[in-house]
Image (cartoon, rainbow, N blue to C red; front, side, top):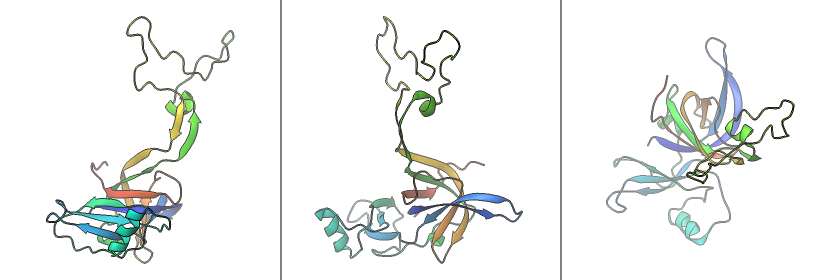
Length: 210
Protein backbone atom coordinates (compact mmCIF):
# COMPACT_ATOMS: atom_id res chain seq x y z
CA UNK A 1 0.00 0.00 0.00
CA UNK A 2 1.49 3.31 -1.10
CA UNK A 3 -1.27 5.65 0.16
CA UNK A 4 -2.31 6.70 3.66
CA UNK A 5 -4.57 9.32 5.19
CA UNK A 6 -3.30 11.63 7.92
CA UNK A 7 -4.45 14.61 9.96
CA UNK A 8 -2.62 17.92 9.58
CA UNK A 9 -1.35 19.05 12.99
CA UNK A 10 0.49 22.23 11.98
CA UNK A 11 3.94 23.54 11.09
CA UNK A 12 7.20 23.71 13.02
CA UNK A 13 10.90 23.67 12.21
CA UNK A 14 13.72 21.19 12.58
CA UNK A 15 17.45 21.45 11.93
CA UNK A 16 19.42 19.27 9.53
CA UNK A 17 23.00 18.00 9.91
CA UNK A 18 24.39 21.35 8.72
CA UNK A 19 22.27 23.27 11.27
CA UNK A 20 20.01 24.66 8.54
CA UNK A 21 16.42 25.32 9.67
CA UNK A 22 13.75 23.45 7.72
CA UNK A 23 10.08 24.40 7.83
CA UNK A 24 8.11 21.18 8.16
CA UNK A 25 4.46 20.16 8.43
CA UNK A 26 3.49 17.56 11.03
CA UNK A 27 1.04 14.88 9.85
CA UNK A 28 -0.55 12.56 12.40
CA UNK A 29 -1.12 8.97 11.25
CA UNK A 30 -1.60 7.52 14.75
CA UNK A 31 -5.38 7.17 14.44
CA UNK A 32 -5.39 5.77 10.88
CA UNK A 33 -6.97 2.31 10.87
CA UNK A 34 -8.33 -0.31 8.48
CA UNK A 35 -12.10 -0.72 8.14
CA UNK A 36 -12.63 -3.21 5.32
CA UNK A 37 -10.33 -5.34 3.17
CA UNK A 38 -11.68 -6.05 -0.32
CA UNK A 39 -10.44 -8.88 -2.55
CA UNK A 40 -10.80 -9.78 -6.21
CA UNK A 41 -12.75 -13.00 -5.52
CA UNK A 42 -15.57 -11.31 -3.60
CA UNK A 43 -15.48 -7.66 -4.70
CA UNK A 44 -13.79 -7.87 -8.10
CA UNK A 45 -10.70 -5.89 -7.07
CA UNK A 46 -8.20 -5.62 -4.21
CA UNK A 47 -8.47 -2.59 -1.96
CA UNK A 48 -8.43 -1.43 1.64
CA UNK A 49 -10.81 1.05 3.28
CA UNK A 50 -9.17 3.43 5.75
CA UNK A 51 -10.58 5.83 8.32
CA UNK A 52 -9.17 8.30 10.82
CA UNK A 53 -10.46 10.30 13.78
CA UNK A 54 -13.88 9.76 15.33
CA UNK A 55 -17.44 10.74 14.48
CA UNK A 56 -20.64 10.26 16.50
CA UNK A 57 -23.45 11.20 14.12
CA UNK A 58 -23.61 8.81 11.18
CA UNK A 59 -26.17 7.68 8.65
CA UNK A 60 -27.60 4.24 9.33
CA UNK A 61 -25.84 2.55 6.36
CA UNK A 62 -22.46 3.90 7.49
CA UNK A 63 -23.15 2.99 11.10
CA UNK A 64 -23.95 -0.60 10.18
CA UNK A 65 -20.88 -0.74 7.94
CA UNK A 66 -18.56 0.14 10.83
CA UNK A 67 -20.40 -2.26 13.16
CA UNK A 68 -20.00 -5.09 10.67
CA UNK A 69 -16.21 -4.86 10.88
CA UNK A 70 -16.15 -3.88 14.58
CA UNK A 71 -14.32 -0.60 13.96
CA UNK A 72 -14.97 2.72 15.68
CA UNK A 73 -16.56 5.22 13.25
CA UNK A 74 -14.16 7.76 11.75
CA UNK A 75 -14.47 11.16 10.11
CA UNK A 76 -13.90 9.86 6.58
CA UNK A 77 -13.94 6.60 4.65
CA UNK A 78 -11.11 6.39 2.12
CA UNK A 79 -10.36 3.49 -0.23
CA UNK A 80 -6.86 2.54 -1.39
CA UNK A 81 -5.90 -0.03 -4.03
CA UNK A 82 -3.50 -2.71 -2.74
CA UNK A 83 -1.75 -5.82 -3.97
CA UNK A 84 -3.48 -9.17 -3.77
CA UNK A 85 -1.17 -10.51 -1.03
CA UNK A 86 -1.84 -7.74 1.53
CA UNK A 87 -1.72 -8.77 5.19
CA UNK A 88 -3.92 -5.96 6.56
CA UNK A 89 -7.00 -6.80 8.65
CA UNK A 90 -10.10 -4.82 9.77
CA UNK A 91 -9.40 -2.74 12.88
CA UNK A 92 -5.63 -2.82 12.38
CA UNK A 93 -3.73 0.39 13.18
CA UNK A 94 -1.47 1.77 10.45
CA UNK A 95 2.20 2.35 11.28
CA UNK A 96 3.76 4.97 9.04
CA UNK A 97 7.22 3.35 9.22
CA UNK A 98 5.84 0.26 7.43
CA UNK A 99 4.95 2.24 4.30
CA UNK A 100 7.18 5.33 4.11
CA UNK A 101 10.80 6.20 4.85
CA UNK A 102 12.90 9.33 5.36
CA UNK A 103 13.98 10.92 2.08
CA UNK A 104 11.05 9.51 0.11
CA UNK A 105 9.07 11.79 -2.21
CA UNK A 106 5.29 11.92 -1.70
CA UNK A 107 2.27 13.71 -3.16
CA UNK A 108 -0.11 15.27 -0.63
CA UNK A 109 -3.73 16.03 -1.51
CA UNK A 110 -6.18 18.02 0.61
CA UNK A 111 -8.82 20.75 0.57
CA UNK A 112 -7.16 24.17 0.45
CA UNK A 113 -8.05 27.02 2.79
CA UNK A 114 -11.13 28.99 1.78
CA UNK A 115 -10.41 32.68 1.07
CA UNK A 116 -13.97 33.82 0.40
CA UNK A 117 -14.97 36.00 -2.56
CA UNK A 118 -11.89 37.51 -4.22
CA UNK A 119 -11.27 39.81 -7.16
CA UNK A 120 -9.22 39.03 -10.25
CA UNK A 121 -6.01 40.61 -8.89
CA UNK A 122 -5.94 38.42 -5.80
CA UNK A 123 -7.48 35.33 -7.37
CA UNK A 124 -5.67 35.24 -10.73
CA UNK A 125 -2.75 37.65 -10.20
CA UNK A 126 -4.02 40.23 -12.71
CA UNK A 127 -1.90 43.39 -12.91
CA UNK A 128 -4.93 45.71 -12.80
CA UNK A 129 -5.67 48.77 -14.90
CA UNK A 130 -3.94 52.13 -14.98
CA UNK A 131 -4.23 54.39 -11.96
CA UNK A 132 -3.12 57.59 -13.70
CA UNK A 133 -5.02 60.87 -14.14
CA UNK A 134 -8.21 60.66 -16.11
CA UNK A 135 -8.86 57.01 -15.27
CA UNK A 136 -12.03 56.19 -13.39
CA UNK A 137 -11.86 54.11 -10.22
CA UNK A 138 -11.56 50.79 -12.04
CA UNK A 139 -7.97 50.08 -11.02
CA UNK A 140 -8.71 46.58 -9.69
CA UNK A 141 -11.45 45.67 -12.20
CA UNK A 142 -11.08 42.75 -14.56
CA UNK A 143 -11.74 44.64 -17.76
CA UNK A 144 -13.38 43.29 -20.92
CA UNK A 145 -14.56 39.68 -20.82
CA UNK A 146 -16.43 39.16 -24.11
CA UNK A 147 -16.19 39.67 -27.84
CA UNK A 148 -17.92 41.86 -30.40
CA UNK A 149 -20.01 40.43 -33.24
CA UNK A 150 -18.13 37.11 -33.42
CA UNK A 151 -18.47 34.78 -31.58
CA UNK A 152 -20.54 37.10 -29.41
CA UNK A 153 -20.30 35.26 -26.09
CA UNK A 154 -17.98 34.79 -23.13
CA UNK A 155 -15.77 31.72 -23.40
CA UNK A 156 -16.02 29.04 -20.74
CA UNK A 157 -13.26 29.17 -18.15
CA UNK A 158 -12.86 32.94 -18.35
CA UNK A 159 -10.84 34.16 -15.37
CA UNK A 160 -13.13 36.31 -13.28
CA UNK A 161 -13.82 37.24 -9.67
CA UNK A 162 -15.31 34.50 -7.50
CA UNK A 163 -14.78 32.12 -4.63
CA UNK A 164 -11.09 31.52 -3.93
CA UNK A 165 -9.69 28.40 -2.32
CA UNK A 166 -11.71 25.62 -0.63
CA UNK A 167 -10.98 23.18 -3.43
CA UNK A 168 -9.02 19.98 -3.92
CA UNK A 169 -5.30 20.73 -4.18
CA UNK A 170 -2.21 18.53 -4.56
CA UNK A 171 1.39 19.36 -3.66
CA UNK A 172 3.71 17.11 -5.65
CA UNK A 173 7.09 15.61 -4.77
CA UNK A 174 7.28 16.69 -1.12
CA UNK A 175 10.20 15.18 0.80
CA UNK A 176 9.73 13.22 4.02
CA UNK A 177 12.33 14.61 6.43
CA UNK A 178 11.31 12.83 9.63
CA UNK A 179 9.36 9.92 11.12
CA UNK A 180 8.27 9.64 14.74
CA UNK A 181 7.68 5.94 15.35
CA UNK A 182 6.40 6.38 18.92
CA UNK A 183 3.70 8.96 18.15
CA UNK A 184 3.27 7.78 14.53
CA UNK A 185 3.95 11.23 13.11
CA UNK A 186 5.19 12.15 9.66
CA UNK A 187 7.28 15.29 8.97
CA UNK A 188 7.29 16.66 5.43
CA UNK A 189 9.36 19.54 4.11
CA UNK A 190 7.16 22.50 3.24
CA UNK A 191 3.48 23.38 3.42
CA UNK A 192 0.43 21.14 3.05
CA UNK A 193 -3.03 22.18 1.72
CA UNK A 194 -5.75 22.99 4.24
CA UNK A 195 -6.28 24.14 7.80
CA UNK A 196 -5.02 22.52 10.96
CA UNK A 197 -7.03 19.39 11.67
CA UNK A 198 -7.83 18.73 8.01
CA UNK A 199 -7.47 15.19 6.68
CA UNK A 200 -5.04 14.80 3.79
CA UNK A 201 -4.05 11.97 1.48
CA UNK A 202 -0.37 11.01 1.40
CA UNK A 203 0.84 8.81 -1.46
CA UNK A 204 4.11 7.92 -3.16
CA UNK A 205 5.08 10.58 -5.71
CA UNK A 206 3.78 9.93 -9.21
CA UNK A 207 6.57 11.93 -10.80
CA UNK A 208 9.74 12.56 -8.83
CA UNK A 209 11.35 15.99 -9.31
CA UNK A 210 14.78 17.03 -8.14
